[in-house]
Image 1: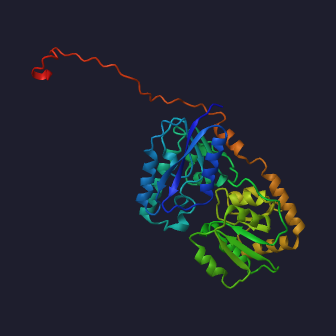
Image 2: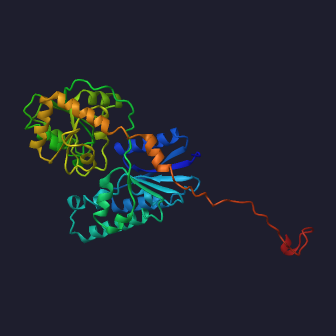
Image 3: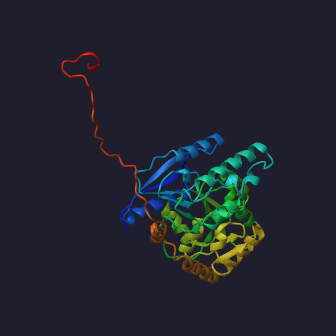
Length: 374
């Protein structure tokens, strides 16, 4: 394939938060460049603290001038508002607060909020309309399912599910399991509280190690205060992270409606089993119950029972971890780049500035200057 100049349009949070999405953006840009293209990450400032800030972000993406690029890849909302002749959407997610989390986050009966929700839905339908987008991808099924749940319009859009690999490329061989490991941004949607509460019912002598930071860090610390088996490490670097994976027994990852979840993939690359929940979104599609981990109800007692089982049966934990590792061998950046760009027909930029010849006709002599000829 010819070398393409590619813009990967990404949202930049007002306060500079970093997580799985930011790792995805960096990994994608790097993979495109390794494949011989010229890829740039185009950050767009996104302020979600007010509705006016959200609308400004939609307009900011719409107003981007990226005509000099051969291809534009949009990612998370509202970057798909970008206008380009060769627009590929690799959708991380729309704003969940206006979709599946609307009723849990807001007063769903509030007329003004309902109006705002309709506005966002209308913008999203416009931005992701197949008239404006050549190819549609999503990082996981829940990304599409929450759209089709609110409007039949989305059922006709041919989303392809395309799993990206983690930005971390090397995971050490697994070591003997020492603890339960829970890495994640600490947020109520990640439900660390389920695992912390599960520790109240765990009967084996095992520690829970939590790493990461986030808005609900304080609440999580308070919940775990009476249990000295729970340890919070805060943010850790990549070397420490992969070492913790390698020394874990199992990785419980129990968010609600997760779009994709790098943690599941990282645990499997570390050959460790994963416990997740029926309502955890894509992790529940990736983990096979009893084969590469457990998929259970979001109940602390049930989670505790599965933790105890794996602590007591290390051979089973190792078997499930190996099964998980084998199940994700098809996930690679090479396959991501190939599927994104493999069959796209690149429409050339027709906005070409050509030299213009100008002939000036004037009945008056230039020399000497008189009247209007001066």
